[in-house]
Image (tube, rainbow, N blue to C red; front, side, top):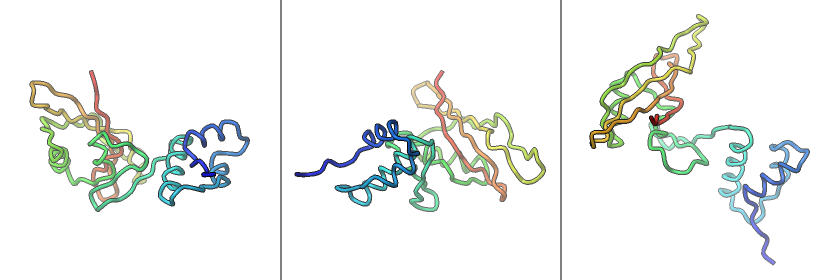
Length: 160
């Protein structure tokens, strides 16, 4: 008799009914019938589901992919990239085939502590022209690293 593969839904049900923590539960589950890659992705997706952790894979120096995500938001590829200035960021957005009309700094990142810690909750707004007499806004959350480069931490398409 062939054993059914364990799924994320099965892990979710077990964790809801278990007194063990999610990480301990995952450690005790057998991944019989799963390839190493399938077991790894099950672990990643369970960790993301239960704890809001985010996992990334470095494809190349300028290409970071979030694990466990369905392909979709093309702007997620901007996350964790570093830019010397807004012109570099604008060029990177435009390589996705988008026409950037402007990038506006909504709130400037500052070191409030004097210890080199930059508040990451500042963002830029990029106005994107769709080419059909319509535009939309892209919010780019960022921080400034110790080398003074802009590091994108989150992207959100703003709908009005």
